[in-house]
Image 1 (cartoon, rainbow, N blue to C red):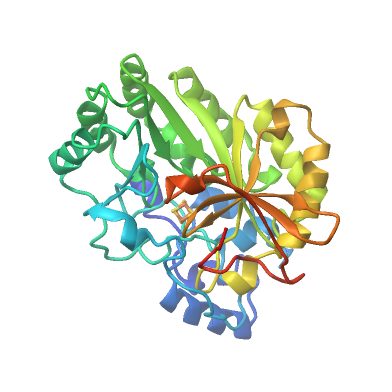
Image 2 (image 1 turned 120 degrees about the vertical axis):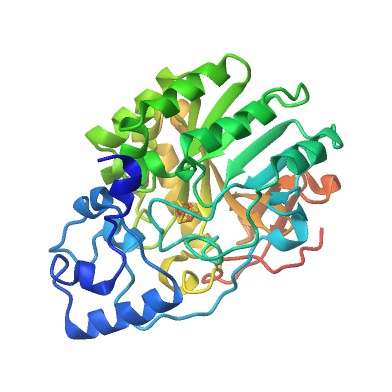
Length: 368
Ligand code: SF4
């Protein structure tokens, strides 16, 4: 079976999971309702990682609707992606980086996804005109790298990925090409069952550095298959990095987070970000952890790492930029720093804010 056929076997309805997860009638009805609002799609592989006997299983939380009333507070575009869109599918928020939405597809629809406005839905936000994208980049010499994301960029066919690489790797101004993909975690068969992808990456890695940024959130996601997928990408010449979303009931525990970071380092990846979960509709109430508690947990987990394992920044991807959450001051304030900013004058700026103990996000406007 090829990977496209495997994806067609994903669990997408409450009926598909009813018996396996022993759903009560109430949970079944609530899931049907939630799936109507935010579609579900779980690979058979990721489903097999769930402990069906544990309703609080962290893997289950990332894949399966809650089975309770869905609170739809929050917004769908938390980072102002629409205002950063320069042409269809291309966002240019930070000077050096062009961000391309290459597909609306994902192997699995994560329940905590911040792009749920487009994942698995009809979307007019996807880039289809490669020449227009290339032209935009050429006319902006300040762009030094491109991030191909979505959705999940490895859900494109290998031929489609090849077309992007052919177009982009000839641009001298680019230092590297980055792929955003969760397939090593949710669907390693995409990489393992289709060697044409790693052959392609190996060929283009000779021309331009390739980074793959993936998304492990829990130590139980390190399996024989996911490890083999990471190894295959590394062998193809890609530098692999991880970013984690900090999630209530999944990794908001110092030991769990510490084990995750150790697993990342053990595999020769570096942890790029631990992202504060965004206030996304239907995600906020289920997954957000208050910043104050988050600082304590992240610091405890980082204290358990050696130097290499301490590379992650606990960060909020805010509408104004990427804000590092540095820690607490003696007077009960929280210390932040702009790592990236829409307004370049803010980059590097440190500021403090007095936040409510339960606050999980910053206001839209930040006075410096
Ligand atoms: S793989 Fe990424 S884009 Fe796709 S559903 Fe998960 S978090 Fe969202």
